[in-house]
Structure formats: C-alpha cells, structure tokens
Length: 323
Image (cartoon, rainbow, N blue to C red; front, side):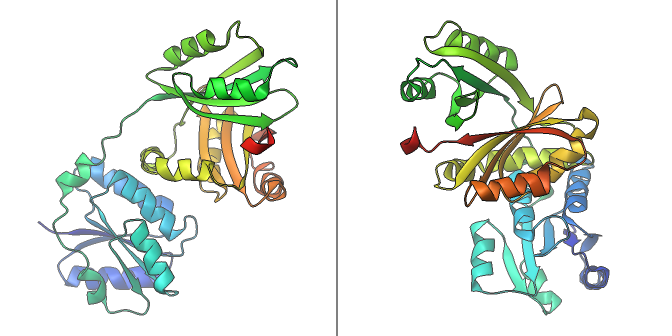
C-alpha cells in the first residue's frame, strides 16, 4: 500500500520541491498552502476512503501555528503521523513537538531522507478512519443572578456539586454572579435539570439558559475542532485552574456571519473555550490573559470590531480567594 503524504507549507517552491522528491521515492504526495486547507484536505480524503498516512507541516503558517495544527490533527487522527519542519529549530522546539505527540522534528535545511525515514508504514488508513469517530453530547451555559441577601460563597459551593455541572465560576458582573457549564445527553435534559436546580432555590433571583453547540463551519474544519476540544479537555482543565486572569465573553453576533466568526475566534491564542448558541445569535468564549488589561486589549483590538460582532458582554471570573 502506497504511503499518502500531505505537505503543508506556505512557500510554493518548498512544498513542490518536497513533493517531487517524495513522488520519486514512491510516496503519493499532495500539498496545502495553509493550515485550514490542510484540515479540509485531510478530512476530505478520509471521507473518500483514502486518508493520509503522514502530514509534514512547517512550523510557521499564515493562519495556524504549526504546533496547534499538530495538536488538532492528533486529536482526531491519533494514528496519523505528523512531522514538523522549521528553519528555527532548537531543543525547546523539539520538546514541544514531542509533548504534543508529534512523530518527528526536522530543522531546515534538510535532506528529504531525514524526513522520509520518520514515516514508517505501521499506521494504516483503517486505523485513521477508526480514530475519526467522534462522540457527541449536549452542553449549555446557565447564567445565575443571586439576590442581595444570598451568601455567594455558599451558593457557589452548593452549585458546584450539582449533577451535570462541569464547571462553576463566580463572576464579577452588574447582574450575574455565577456561570455554570453543564453537560448531559440532550439540551432538554439539561434544561430540566437547571429548572429543578434553580427554580425556587433560596438566594437565586433569576437564571438564563443558553444552549450551545458548534455551528456549521465551512469546509471540513468542524470535525477537527470537535475532536480537538475533546482531546484537550485536560489542558482546558489545567488552564481553568491557573492563576491567569479569566473572563467569559457573551457575544451577540449576526447569525449570517457565525461560521466565519467562530473559526477566527477559535484560533486566538487567548481563547480557552468557544461555543455557539443553538439559536446562532451568540457565541460564548472563555478568555485568559496575563491580567484583565490584557484581556481588554484582546477584546477591543481583536474581537469587538470583527465583522458580524454586534455586542460584547464581559463577565470577569473571580478567583476563589476574592469571593
């Protein structure tokens, strides 16, 4: 069986030179000029029954950092070999590639055999396809308003241990005091649980329920984002428990621009989580930065004026010791 290789580099001359060398050595090689088109090609070939066995990607791409591309691919196709190439190679970069389960790192300039000897053929198309079977579940955010007589610390502790609550965050906002992220088998089940948990509860003045799901995305990027989120659940948990400044953003959007906005926001370095409302008129982000001024600069400089953004509402997460 011929090994299928995808070459990802924004320099046309580099990837074409590599492609010619690969074909001469008996490999079936294709090429992409950026990360998003690479993801589309990977998913398209998998659906056609002829998935790539190996991806060779440059570290620096015009849209997605090469290390992030490595993580995204591995989250959906853990059996697919991913080799990173770079003109800025060092020991630190090699360790980063290894930590993200990369299958090799090669510094430029290099001989093509330095790359091809890392390929191997033990990872088959069948294994790649088996790895591409995502599981799904429903999620929803619940924004909780407490009355003035309520003890916020006690409410926070009580709600943290309720069934279906994945995360519970105290926030600093003129209305809401707590944000819950809930997971379950269906949105209907989650809404019933929220109603049972909050209706008539002492100290709760009101609550808002926002069903979320990832929207339809152009090309083949949606399934990669789905699996990347699942694969990196531990990293998200680690980020949530860090000491960095953290804010939720509830962003009202033009539904016609939702898919494009979702992709652009997803790849911001400060974004830890990103969900879209089922109604298509909101996205909810969890942002982290060195401090809240950093987050504010990201909001004003890179989010607020994106096409399709109508309104941005920030809810700053309070550290436990400040409650």
